[in-house]
Amino acid sequence: MAAQVHGFQTEVTKLLKLLANSLYSNKEIFLRELISNASDAVDKLRFLSIQDPELTKDDPLFRIRVKADEKAGTLTISDNGIGMTLEEANEHLGTIAKSGTEEFFQNLSKDQAKASQLIGQFGVGFYSAFIVADKVTVISRSAKAGPDEAVRWESDGSGTYTSETVTKEGRGTDVILTLKDTEKEFLSEWTLREVITKYSDHISTPVWLWEKETPADEKKDAEPVWHWVQVNDAKALWTLPPKDIKDEQYREFYKHISHDYSDPLCWAHNRVEGDLEYTSLLYVPKEAPWDLYSREREGGLKLYVQRVFIMDNADAFLPNYLRFVKGLVDTADLPLNVSREILQDSPVTRKLKKAVTKRALAMIGKLAGEKEKYAEFWAQFGRVMKEGPVEDYSNRDEVMKLLRFASTKSGTAAQDVSLEDYVKRCPEKQKNIYYLTAGSYEAAANSPYLERLKKKGVEVLLLSDRVDEWLMANVPEFEGKKFVSATASDLDLGELEDKDEKEKKDEAAKAHKGIVERLKKALGDKVSDVRVTDRLTDSPCCVVGNRDQMLTPQMRRMLEAAGQPVPEEKYALEINPEHPLIGRAAAETDDAKFGEWANFILSEALLADQGTLKDPSAFVKSLNALLLK
Image (cartoon, rainbow, N blue to C red; front, side, top):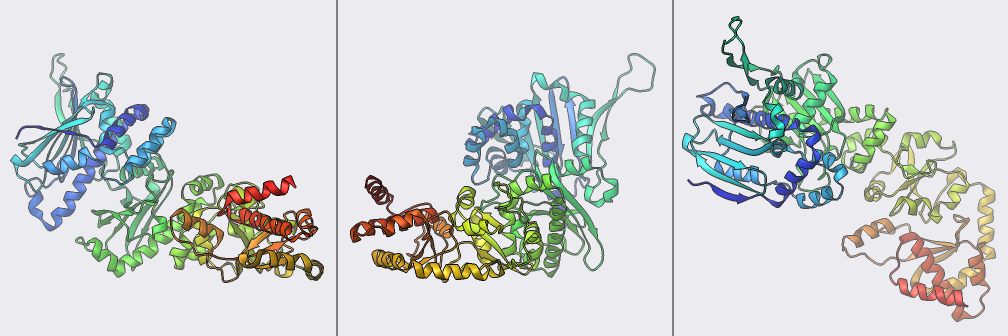
């Protein structure tokens, strides 16, 4: 079959350009990526051979080989793993099968300074070969295919590649790099040994390096002897005692299993024996994956059964809100032929999920003790963690302790206040946890609903993430204190409110009954009620929903942004009768002009509460008219 020329997927071409510009300072990672891919190919075949031993009958010993050819200027990484067919090579090497990649690369191209960091989130994989190579040739034969059904794939990374059917004796894949003239250092045995030892020592498949050994013969013209030398320990890292593993080994193993470019933020390694026997090695990445909020994203841990790799992205062992956690689970309590369907219904899986979730939360809880590191973590994964108390009822209390919020005490947008800290600071008489949701931190921090609470020194949580509204609607309390919205129509301060204040409020309502009645008449069915309030000290007015109100302003905004129909709801108008604006309206004797004032006051309150109006031009006209008068 003659070689056919194919064009790379657009995203692949963009990735190749960015790799050349952004990762050049750490170019040696190409070898780590290619060896990791080879290790994955071996793991997959090892699993398949359990059910079909014929696949490995002719070559039962798994291995990865690295060989440099100085004369040809090539470096070859070979494995005897699962291999590829022609169709698989075109699919896996010519396209990136991830939804949202176009948008990802658009964002990545906007900020070249952050490009390498973002590429790390994406995973560079096979394409990192083009950092050091002018040309990359792949010769591969599937373990299920015959010698004449192998494939040769080749590209110089310029936008196209060729592929054709060829003959290959053994199964597996050879990746042949024709190195750039500036990258000949990777033909050095010493350099290759150093890089392999640094990045791939933990891989359970033996990695062999083609090395020369000069005979002890003292003859000057003695020819060197070439042979294969194993350069890694080939011991599965997670099977070793944690005390024998260095931090650097943990970091490199993380990069191997995640294909991330950055170090992890933290990790936890546990071995458990008893009714349930398993080992878990969990990591928290430093950066959130670029597709963390994509519905099509595949997350989960690597699953091993008795050290045999079973599957990637096993999502049955962690709840969805912990989908950013990387790592593996190795157990002897599941069968080697376990499938995803069996995992979902297995009682062993349920027990493992419960145990591994506890381990993950304990790891994050330990990280919470390091304030600066936890701030990094929260900036990346805080919104996802807020899904936890609703999704994971059995661990609700533990997850709630890990949440962080902005508050009126902190005075900044930084979400660094824990619920435990809030409760500790509460006055003895305070029985509730007060919060306010808004479209942004600034809107929450400057909300008129806070005025009375601030005056009394009550701390209020300021919530502006989209998930906050959903969280508060589903979490009633924390450590015996109820969550109460600052916008509640019947805001109850309990023992914080003394008798004198209540009497003053009742007196004010009686004294300003006239303006209340006039506003009710002028506004008619635009409002459900008009009343005097004591929640305001600096602002003239606000609107509050009814106790049985279906949607909060934040939820209304979210639905409207999503194009969803939003039911009409009437609000009660609350006024601060001591404010000059209310006094000015009350002084107006002409009913028509008073009606203008009434509508203006209501529009102002709605604008402050919801951030928008149905008819902003009408509001501007009424404002101009009142200013001119």
